[in-house]
Image (cartoon, rainbow, N blue to C red; front, top):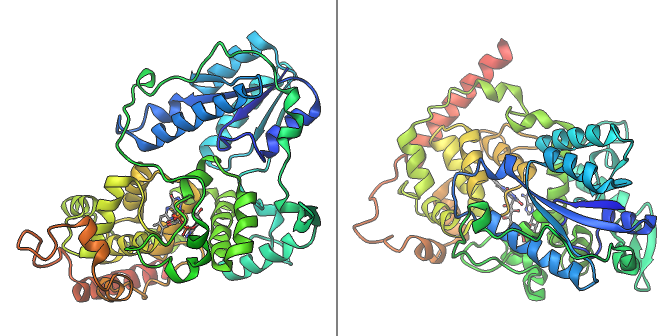
Length: 447
Ligand SMILES: Cc1cc2nc3c(=O)[nH]c(=O)nc-3n(C[C@H](O)[C@H](O)[C@H](O)COP(=O)(O)OP(=O)(O)OC[C@H]3O[C@@H](n4cnc5c(N)ncnc54)[C@H](O)[C@@H]3O)c2cc1C
């Protein structure tokens, strides 16, 4: 029997690794592990991510049952579970899709070593991205660290291998994997390990509504005109599905190419940041531009708490943080504004903000979150230069001029219960940030 290990690919359809496992011919037993190395560290018992994953895994098990098969679900530490599986089921191979985060790489290596002891092959495939970092490289070699040339090369690479799908020409890299065709190779047995409930894992449900897998067609069609206005429903809200693979990135790119090119470009940002993490894994806790680690952050804990709780007195920042706290998602424009306010006006280390987002975002993805934060702080690849500091007042005028977004999330705005002044005002914060950044970067370069 072959084991197929689901991780960030909680679907049967168009699943690269599952397709390979099924096509290889041995009966395939799908498995999922609720990883206690991760779950035990989560600060909140009501965590919408755990709820979403649990629900998606239950749906996946149901989908397998429709084929007469079933999913074995475990709750524990992957290496220990695999030791058990290896000895109990004696699999002939383990198939999976690649995960590029440092923790996942170390975990997979440990599992591989365990399987190696019994000569069980561990086969892994690309599924989570369109291109891995070694597929989109500069002509002279090496990774792109600037988005626009990366994006052009990404598009050109797509066209290097053309194929057909539903009688239309399509890039080979976007073709779906027809897993259903080989579904007869799924092991036809009920699972002795059903999907655990949230309560069995010590978690509680939240009241958060989780957006569906597909955005309405008109949202994507008008995406380039609506995406920057947080008071409208102008973006797809599919990031959590891409994060956990409840949808296929290939299907999303194919659809985007038909509907809106700006939307395609956003999906390319996702590959870009994933590629950056693959190439430079140390960005996880260090600035990509090392001189930025010389900035003497103020790290005022009270101001940080005000930022987290949406009490800074800057309406659009407060609205964003309260949206994040309430629904586990924040509009992209406002992620940029809140991140800029934290790292520039408040001079708080980008890692603090990154960590807070990581605890709260339903779509939390290390590569994109780290990329977004380092972009805002100026310390990352292709980052906003430090001297271009977001003016939250002009951002408000441009993107939420009637205060629709602000009023939705900050109901007391405009009353005497809302602070009369921000904790750090724009002019003062901007000048201080310019001075501190300039000095720290100059010192680092001269050191
Ligand atoms: C400080 C900061 C932190 C962020 N943290 C995350 C994170 O943890 N996880 C995450 O998925 N995105 C993150 N982003 C990127 C972006 O804000 C979200 O992907 C987006 O808001 C998700 O909503 P949506 O699905 O409606 O996006 P849409 O605007 O509809 O975009 C479609 C898809 O494209 C991808 N995408 C769009 N913009 C970006 C981008 N800038 N970088 C990478 N991918 C992008 C996402 O997969 C998204 O679902 C962050 C951005 C910033 C500035």
